[in-house]
Length: 605
Picture 1 (cartoon, rainbow, N blue to C red):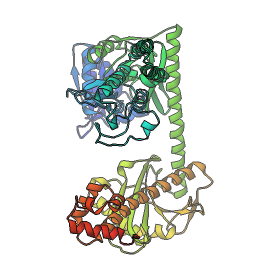
Picture 2 (picture 1 turned 120 degrees about the vertical axis):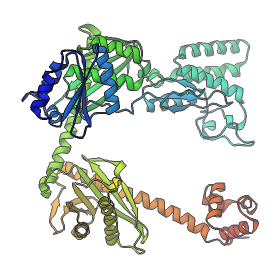
Picture 3 (picture 1 turned 180 degrees about the horizontal axis):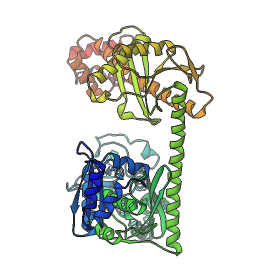
Picture 4 (picture 1 turned 180 degrees about the vertical axis):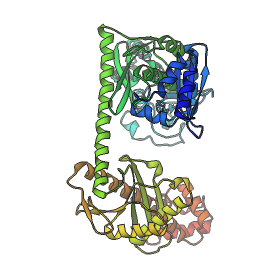
């Protein structure tokens, strides 16, 4: 449809509540919105002027749109939310979906249950505690509670085998040593139940119980039991409330901050429990198409639906048009809550703090984005590129005296490592050390994959960096030219401290970067990360081959017996230290004798 046809269709819509769905030429949904009056909202997109950059970009891609008329603003809100969740449109606000609250899962049907951190509650008969706000804080809390109650935090299986030795935690007084068999499962369950009580937020009840038991034991002259209860009581008291209850899911009040900056917007949630600020969550994102009221409405829905829980009270920085419908929506989907906009007093100060935090986060990221943009623009101008190099690929080679040669490819997008696009190559065509031809092989394979339509290599870089000087850059250019691929290529020239001091073209032209701190830092990070990635793969390959050659040199040991030995003993060191009788448990007697002789032939008698 033409722009005039789209505007004519929008003007023909009714003044009723509903949802509108914008689509591009391919039929892909690019934006979903709701409106109390469809005609007014949808027709506003097809004005000639007055749009911000992002809205204008969205409108330029609209080929056609559909609408769904509903009975109320609440129905429009629900329908819009369902459509956004299903289509994930490019121009809608989309919070990250990995922010769900973690839970503690434990199987109480076994004698020695353990605490595990999971992302979702399943109907599997296990006990679930939480949800908790922070995964890292939850791991810290489990560690703190376990040490306070002297529960094991190691990976040993319980009950342990007879004669098992306790680990260092036992000797440091951080574990009761259940792996030795004493204390037994009854004592373990008692301590474990106490830990559950703490995670349920019933610390005061547990402390009162321990204090009563301590006093009773003292009166009965059972001083050892009294001392044990006293020590446990002190340990639990030392665990701060924030460590244990850094739990936005249990907050009674959430205070919302929103800020629209010049480049980025920010959404902040401060979690309060009984008036005490215990946690902060935030997200920074591109400027939304929606006005502030509509943007905040979308953010609230997404945030609480992702987490599946609501506090009793939510304080907002300003009114949203669908306040009543939003409160009804949240209450029906995630839990009873009350939305309000404080106008004065302590609550208003709390909201001002949240907005200040949102502003700081937005400006912090904006400054970083601006620094990145300036660095990329500097590279564009210095190298004569058609545009800032937003996607940079870098390559390096690693080997040990020509053995186990590997190549690495790292990808930086907008100056940040894009690890899902990293690739590594085992050199196949060379047997001796030759970094020059190794790089040639790596580039040939990478861009052949691109030409063959391999999705893993489907994007071309805006800039390609190779380890080395102009000779390596020239080789890389000729390699790509032979494949019919054209990409800007520069070599990374290092100084005496192995830092990239300059970038060099194939014709020998050097671009010094040490005078620009931001660019020098960026190229240095790229060079170090590419080298690290190559070394990591090389070491892994070298270690694997070393293990294989050590065992493969022994008569009677093939692939199957080598794997059997490693599975049984876990390492070459353990195989070396094993007796001939112990080796017989994994391989035949004659092979065991050969293995033992191989590792002990030079031993003194």
